[in-house]
Length: 340
Ligand code: KG4
Ligand code: ZN
Image (cartoon, rainbow, N blue to C red):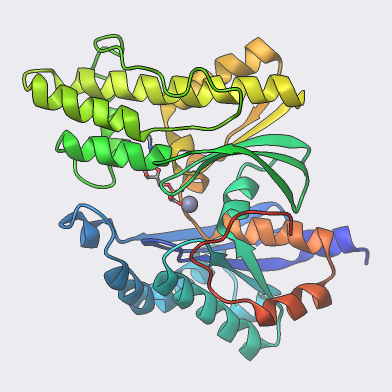
């Protein structure tokens, strides 16, 4: 059996515990057989953000149950799993350690390979496209543009100089009293508002590079809310969302033109944003570029995307090499995405 056939046949269980969601998914080839995500939102809501120590303890409490649920949903037994993959970074170190060590122990005890995966490589794999492509990642922790000429090769063209796009959504949602995580709540409220109500200054309009910046915008919203307490929250939300989306699309458009790529992958939690999806559709028509956005349940953190990224590693490298590398790997809270 050749390597590609083997990849299509293999059943991989993928785990992500990089932040506050315990995600375990099972894939075979490109098919997602199960994707169970246990959200800890309720646990962290009272604090307005993730409490790292609490997150690790909760992962530990529920990871085994989530694994059983994923197997049941896929209709398979542990014996059917051919390899186990897990996120090793970046993320909260205590949280990462839970998924990483669970995965390693599972693989070791079943005598099957363990495949360590970079969290962002997982987000990128969720969009089911084949390189070469340009990739916009916008999540709670990252906002970056990568050129991906082949699987395993990631060239960062630009990134946020301060807050990530999702982080800005969360912080502005908090300012507007919308709770945590704020992205989905803010964009829901924005549908009732006027995006032209407030003209926020677009970030980094003069740059020649491909960076992002959202903390100035967040401060502008805070100042507005303080100075105009009667401003309708829906209008503030819509104007803020419009500015973020315009900025993401503006930089991406320039990068597409410069690189000449005709495929764009959009990944990370903010890819769930409907306004962003709409603007990208327009961009796709304007530049004649194919835009790949993951299915909604694959955009935010989950285990299936980690298993999908592991598939690509398997098609690039042989399993002995991967397993040898995996032995030396540790949880890495700070981990730039470079070529693997
Ligand atoms: O990728 P993800 O699940 O976790 C990280 O790796 O960070 O992304 C979560 C982020 C949060 O900041 C959340 O507010 C944002 O994605 N998000 C959204 C939407 N859904 C999730 N932001 C804007 N609009 C949405 N619909
Ligand atoms: Zn993520």
